[in-house]
View (cartoon, rainbow, N blue to C red):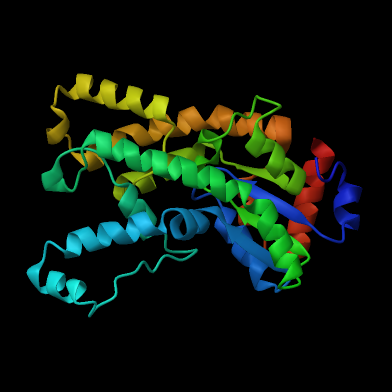
Length: 286
């Protein structure tokens, strides 16, 4: 690992970490806290995916919808209006909206084939954004003078790597450039994440084999044709299964490539001194 001991971490002139775990457990909270100190560069994987790698897909989708409205169509065709995505670190809605949900088109659902195409676009974009981490470390230092770097990864990172493969190219690149830190949630956190998702189900990226099995099982269980599936009902049904599917993959990432902290510890953080102490203790336990 980049830092083998707590002493290595404390003595490092340049600290570089990658945070991973389920969305909602504190990755962006830590990254924002560190960025606001003025000494840390914050690299968001989801933001990079939504701007560099899927930005054109997202905006083209907006334009397709606008072209259905005669008033907007005329303005677009005459270059009289501009349509863009206002995606930010704290507002990833344009990306998740483009990913979509499969099912009944009358309820905003996509045909399953088109949905899978968008999932594949996200997979390719996420791998590329993760591999850009080293580039942004050098960019943050060379252009802006940031010694410290935090990568805020998406919840689906475990779906695009093989943490049990010592030759996995993405895991090797990330571990050489950063200390990988898993924010591990408890059973209570999992229950709360499920309740939160039930209130506002949102599109997510899933590993293709997992998603195909989930779709087939759901159709069999509900005895519904594909175009009659309630998109929100399907993603609600899938979410708890996705959490269970991801947990051992996160665990393998931490065991083989990084360290573990808990969501409770993260929630108590108030400053960089606390963060430094938390990482040092995680290295001591490893």
